Length: 312
View 1 (cartoon, rainbow, N blue to C red):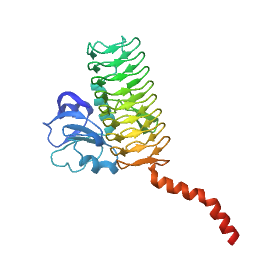
View 2: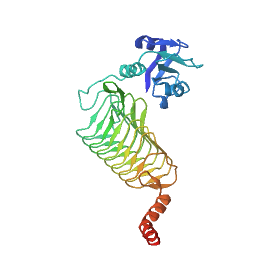
View 3: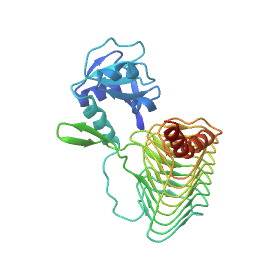
View 4: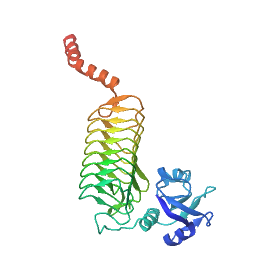
C-alpha cells in the first residue's frame, strides 16, 4: 500500500508513540507486510522468530517491540504493540467510508464502458474503456480495472482480506489497505469473489479468464493468460505464473507458487510449490505420471496380498 504522499517518519513515530532508532529525517512512502515490502515501506514484527526476516527485508522502517542493533540504512520504531501501530497507520489512510450511492462520486469510469443496473462501485475505483459489468456485481474501494474487461453478474470484487491476528480475546481484524487489480482482457465469471490484499495488491493478469464461483484470496497474484475453472479456490498470497490452468474445484493453499504453464486436474489439492510446464492431479497434487504409477500399483495390491497369503 502506497501512502498518499511521503510522510516524515518522525511524524509517524509521534502518532504511534514509538521511539526511533536511526535516521529520523527519512520519509516513508508505503506500508506493507514483510513479504511485500519495497524500499521506503514501513513493516512490523512482534515475534523474535521473524526479527531477522524483517530486518533483512527491503523495508526501510520496522516497528518492533524489542531493542536490537539497527541495520545500516534502516529505521527502527520501538513500541509495545507493533501490530497496533502498523494497523493504525493503515486505518488512517484507508478510513472506513460507507457508500451513500450505488456508484461513488470518486469512481472514474470510462464512458465507453457498460455498467448494468444494480452494480455497486466503491470509492476511488477506476474502470478503463470498453469494459462490461453485468447486473448486481460489486466492485470495492480502490479497485483498478483495465480495458476490455468483462465482469459477469453477481461477481464480488475487492472485499476485505480474510486476515486476523490472534490474541487473548479472540481474533483482531486487520484493516485491508490493499487493492484488486484486473489487467486488460480479463474475464470474471458470475459469482466470483476476489479479496483485496491486506496491504499489497491482489492481481489478475492480462488475458486471464475465471469461470463462475471462483474465489481468489487476499494478495494472490495470478499471471497472464491463466484459466481457472468453476469453484477453484486460490489461497491468500499464492502465486500462479503465466499460462497456468486449474480445472474445476482445485484448491490452492496460501503462499504456494505454481510455475508457468502448469495444468492441475479437477478436484486436486495444491499444498506445495509446483514446477511449471507439467500436469498434476490428486490430493496432494503430484505429477500425473507419478500418480498413475501409484494407482496402477494400488490396483495390483489385492492380488499381491492373495498371492502372499497362499505362499504363507
